[in-house]
Length: 349
Ligand code: 1CP
Image (cartoon, rainbow, N blue to C red; front, side):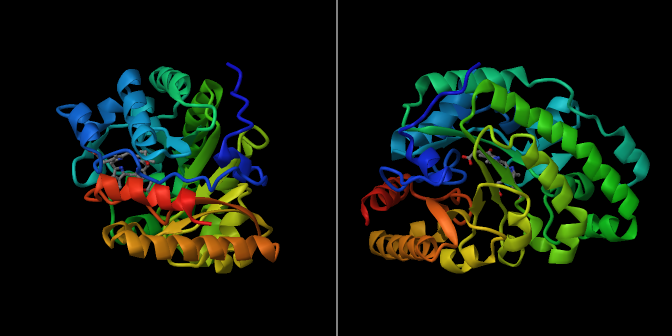
């Protein structure tokens, strides 16, 4: 397929360093449990099954775009979808997250980990449906999980508070660690190719848990593999790179090569931009908890965040701003509070 030419999409204008017609906004986890219409269509369908149902994944992707006037749709999927498609035993347990049938503990486990070697047709079909519904001002953002964050689920066997088994492998058996990272890269890039060839307009690399690492660990054990993944789509679509609590890693993460750097709410955007290896587009960074604090607080926070982004651009540390939360929408967020926040983001100077 040929990619859509979206000359009037604010999100892509900003991602490409141009001045957008309005402040573009999308929210991580904008699809999902904050929306009653999501709960309704997902009823009785396990999370990972829904990611392989083209009409359903397209419908869920579109729901927040219709309801909140978002400038970007984020593909409804999960970071473990390519593992599942490769044949790895994984399930998403409600209220918990991805859980593996078997954790990876040895070199033999790594060598036996299936590799995704085919397009995920159900996802490609879903993207085709979404692209038929989006306006040409609205961008479709695809995504993949970064190898560190995926490895953490594989090595721990599920969600982890401290990532101790992952760090133990990284330091106690670095050869096995590097073998695992090398083995994950083709699965991730194959899933990314499925999305790019189906026509996504931009992509985000989620390294959600990288913030648990020291900069030295990140550079030695993670960064080269994230570089490799981002390189496979260089020049094709804008690339966004994000992790939670990565204030101390923003410099190193920016070296992975993305055009846009996601920043969580802990670091003001103008401070974050000073840490980048070279000027980038900023993405962020309203604390998702602020959506519980009422309109006046949201307005103040939006004004502050926009001013910080503008300052970063003014002094030459950043080349633009895409508005987002500092991490995903919390499941109990009131849907109307999200609509109202988006309206404020679009309106405030
Ligand atoms: O039943 C449900 O509704 C399950 C909740 C849920 C949803 C809606 C999960 C389980 N995944 C998703 C979809 C999802 N996952 C999206 C959808 C698009 C959107 O943003 O609207 C995205 C981008 C992801 C990516 C994802 N999955 C990440 C990276 C993003 C982030 O939040 O940092 C991670 C870490 C996961 C793992 C995961 N999947 C689901 C949960 C609850 C978790 C996190 C578990 C943990 O704390 O480790």
